[in-house]
Amino acid sequence: MSANPDFIYAPPMSPYLDILYRDDDLIIVNKPSGLLTVPGRLPEHQDCLQHRVQRVLPTATIVHRLDMATSGVMVMALNKPSHVAISRQFEKRQTEKYYLARVFGKLMPETGEVDLPLICDWPNRPKQMVDHERGKKALTRYQVLAYEEKTTLVKLMPVTGRSHQLRVHMLSLGHPIIGDRLYAPPEALALSPRLQLHAKTLSLFHPQSGENMCFTAAESF
Image 1 (tube, rainbow, N blue to C red):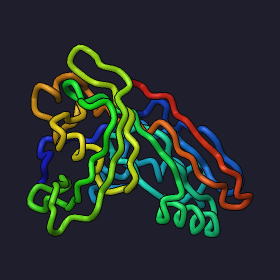
Image 2: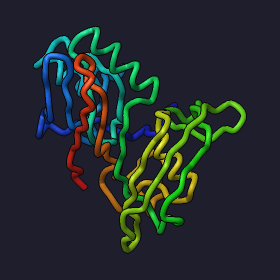
Image 3: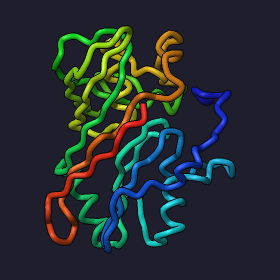
Image 4: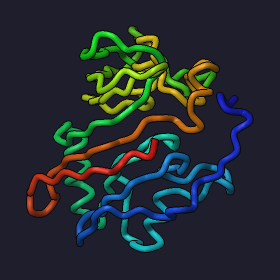
């Protein structure tokens, strides 16, 4: 059973691949909304960021993921030692990242955090849900950037990296991200043709030099 039975995969083709930075050890890309990070099971779900990068750099491997509907900064490793080193930074929460989102309604207070454990909503997968008994710890900090007519522009800083964490945490506050096909009610869904969630910046330590590097991708909403 799918939460999106009428979904048709139509990944954006322009730009086909938006490379922000590359060296011998890693590549930084700006993933567009609507493109899978890794291939799906079906033949029509094979086009994805991983395959697009591997066409240019065959040794590239996925270290972390963004939801298909989410855009923004992603890092891929170009060799095994770099993959191990970068993966360890994600596991130990040594990377820093923040997202921009536009949520429905007026989010109050202007700063805060959501500390609600999450688990897969199995009958409605891939949806996730809050579960205080079986869920895994999930923590998101937020800061309002601007109040708009029907929406709020907010900076989201995930401390943990659970699947759909930002989407479900904003929903739990009563302010779903607009354009969210999985979680937004009709009024919030209708405000945008895409999920307005963008991985704006990613900071990490270079896997070889140890240099602290910060990468930014401009949002397209």
